[in-house]
Length: 175
Image 1 (cartoon, rainbow, N blue to C red):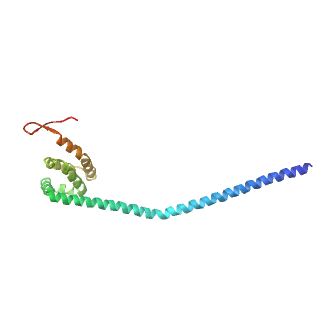
Image 2: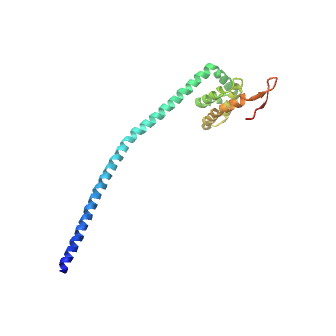
Image 3: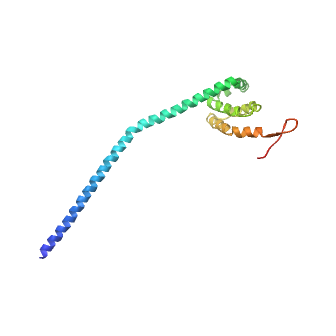
């Protein structure tokens, strides 16, 4: 009788072990399927990566070309407005180094000075361009963008001047 009970216990243990093996086999098949799907997705991503990189590069190239077109348009407007003549006079006074300002920083500074009151433009144009000439080449665009960002505040400060009876500025108003 003892052997019969031992055999029955062993048979129960064997059935539990077989059920565990079966469950592990199902889990293994499921994990293997997931791994294969992940591998397929990874390969798909790697196949798409060059196309995405090309698309991003193309978008950046378009943005740069549009920026260049905007600078050319600004140059044409400034040329019509007579700012080129002023620039040539300044280059004649300052020498050949001022010709090395670069189109983009020069155009941005010119745009910023166009925002100022007409009577103040020549002074600030000369001042900003003179500072551009003094700066190292890699700092010029940052300076020009900062000038453009502050142009409205400068315009407001220039137009808020309190005038005396004879028309000369006496002091600034406090806000």
